Image (cartoon, rainbow, N blue to C red; front, top):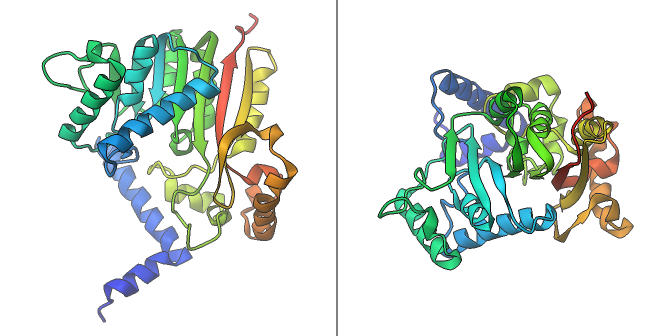
Length: 332
């Protein structure tokens, strides 16, 4: 029996078949990484964008870091985790005042190098970035004060840096923490690597990135038991299901010695609600909570055991901007 393309497509949309597909994909990623194959992963943020759209995307991310990190300028040594296929944000950080920006990514995101050169040229003309250019043509691997570290997981990088005692002024990421294998352990090491008065800004997307949406409800990925979900995502870098309540617990532990302060700003709420203006979680109105909380309460009975007791408002948060300020050093 030969299945038609439409029939195969229908089967792939089925809940169980999707799980099997992710398990197979995860296994292939394990094999690829064993042999040092790092091409792929996420970060294809500019592949389907026009030049103008790419420039706006770069500007928006940079402005978000400045606004929510309350930064008038970047300075010293900074780190961008998961830059994907562009050094554009790092270039704006350098223009703002950073002496050096390190770009950390587990995977190498394929890119159109000629298009990248055009993006950098337009960005340079708009923001006077010619001082970053090293040579006659734009080469993202050879930009003054910008260093790529591709194939190095963020977890390994920050653990090594924490052990060495090196420090950074600013650490940023956008839609990356949800893909790390150990985001909470990495967050702890990032805090150790942050200078006094330093800042971390992480925009974290808790949605399922198309694993089950839009065919199923937005919490469907939370219905998969933990052991099975690990088989689906352990090596692929897919959504790790570390949610706001997990971050809060670690950050509360870190803040007990008064070395850090932190804020959560809402980015998305469950149900496809994108906030026009990011607001602190504790400033969201009761009216804004109604729809996302109703969705959570409707589907709570389906959730895996790990999530059934999580407060509805925590599960209703689909994306945050986490801002951490280093306020001191631990007492010896």
